[in-house]
Image 1: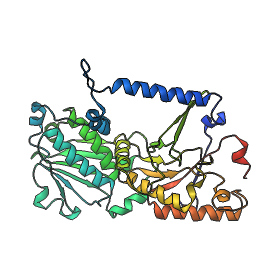
Image 2: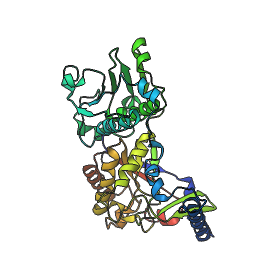
Image 3: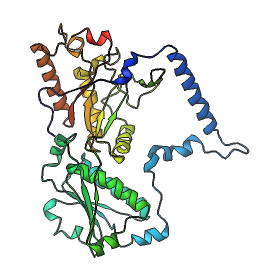
Image 4: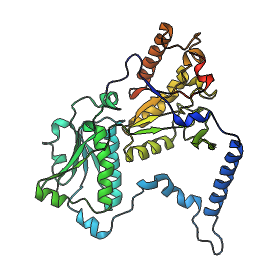
Length: 379
């Protein structure tokens, strides 16, 4: 899908917003929730003492940081099974900050851990893929079918209506060589996590593939796979499970106050989302007209959003924003936010162009329209 045109709007009625904000007693619920979490954390992470064998926070941190992507070395039997494969990872037609590059790094690092031996990463060009000695042998050749320049793939992210551009195959040669070929770098990345999962369980069988002359195909079930953040620009996060249960979490995953300076946690989050097949993310809370969120479409906040979008793009995740419907008034100092007004149309057009320039992977805006007067009075 190409980048958004003059204005790309998705008007969504969010049923959860029908409650019109936190119900009575929300502060008490929030405090109870906080106390409950605090008590459970204290119980779980008690310092070592006589008769207490529970792990400390520092001991658990490496495991918590990797979550479900934490890998351990395979058993000697399974390592022997793959002894004739994965001598190296040869990565073709990629740039440093691309989904294909992330896939190749993931394969090299994770296979080194699983197999208990170095699986070095080698870089090749597409024209040398079948002739260079570096890719002949028992390695894994990773490439994408697209001949577009690596940076151009950022413009192709997002919803296309088809899973074809995120489909990849793994084939095996009789000499122990393997090839992971995807329609795009995002396809290769999607297949990478599934291939590693299969190897970690000992299910992937390259010898059987080679004998049968077959390949394994990896493809998502649906083309659009969204992660919708409920993060406010003041650093808080709110979520509402139902009309009688509103909880505000004290700290957002994103530190908007220090962006565009990046933190390692952002890359970790992008990696986790990419590993489960997420390919689109809304970077901010849908309650966009709350006072802490109205400045999203200002140039300074677009630059902050662009920093996050660049990290997400490395893992094949397109960026969306959820601006306030009244932004032309609140940010642009217009007298109306009426979308039929030519001044409003021009303002949105300029803002979308600005966002697209800052974020090549930007795909458009999501608007939440709750049924309350303060969001409609600006029309």
